[in-house]
Length: 468
Image (cartoon, rainbow, N blue to C red; front, top):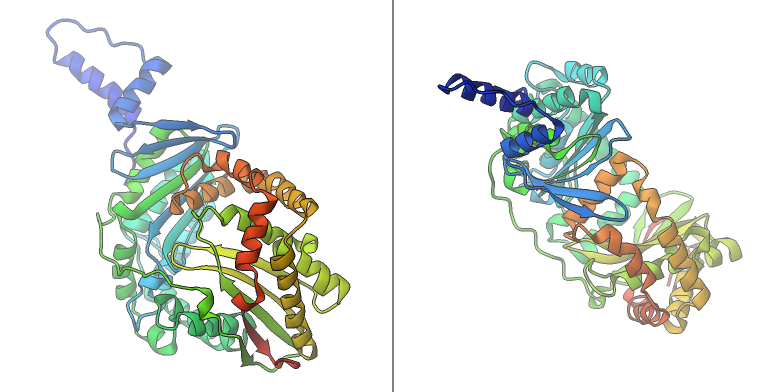
């Protein structure tokens, strides 16, 4: 399990060469330059460095074949690592919904000789964190540790991938938690709204599938352990890391983690959802006895790589994404007092793009709230935004961007998002320029195309009044 010390290996090779030579050989002094050359040659690393304004990103492939993006940050003695594999909850076999969640739940619940308690105690001893999660399309793991403990911490993580236990005790705890979730979600307004939207827009798509009592009962520790070997494979592994570590130091740690992963596996293809304005379904009401109604609204959105994405991104700030700076908040909360908060956001995933929003209001004002939404949609789609609103939006979106890079973990996470969306290693340097390049005409064209009221559908959860 222990990683090979490349420097020691290089020095040993030199001494062995001396022993097998007839003539006396003088062992060269291992200067810093010689050491770096020896390590790089032994590791076989070809490092490409992107000199960016936000970060210097080193790209390399480990000797074991894992693609890594690294930001070496010597001033902070913490190493943060992100690992991600394409394939997630939507890849669960039909009738076994919840299987990917079972996999990620158990990744820090014991490995090798360490049971769940022993594994967590060892993480505490090493002052580290390690955990995994699953989304529709991705399975991910995150870890942070002190650089001084990085070798031991990565040994523990490697053990979790090589010999995860999937013990009966943690598995039964997972099942109990899932059973509680099955009950509580039936009174969760947000979950009920998601279900209604999924059934209205893509009822037969894997994204619409839900865990159930039957699907949870069908799971076993053995099935979860086997599914882990389908989700977590070498040829779909992406790694990003930030910390006081060099590529030559990090590469063997990553290879140790990946050493026992399967080379590849087959997962079902997840089709894209064809969502257009023709799919608008009006208003759906989900009855839930409570004093307030949750109102969510949705319309077709913009693909991440579409030229209209950045105009839409800037426009969203003015429309409903800018808190008290947004039109919806100013009108529906400040002026009309219909809600404590209302928001909008863009969902620009690979398989489904939408323009979403939501807020809560009293049951008796639900009709007024939706009417207010439609009025603001009409105003912005027909009249556009002002020069002042555009300037404010761009100033905020550019000025706040560095806050996404104020910790090693955040930088590693940002890099992973860029890798998953295939935006390019120079994205961080291009991003603000693309925001700044958005013109008033760009924004207003997008407003007219995407924010017309008849493009939106509404889901209301509660006991709403005043709806047509």
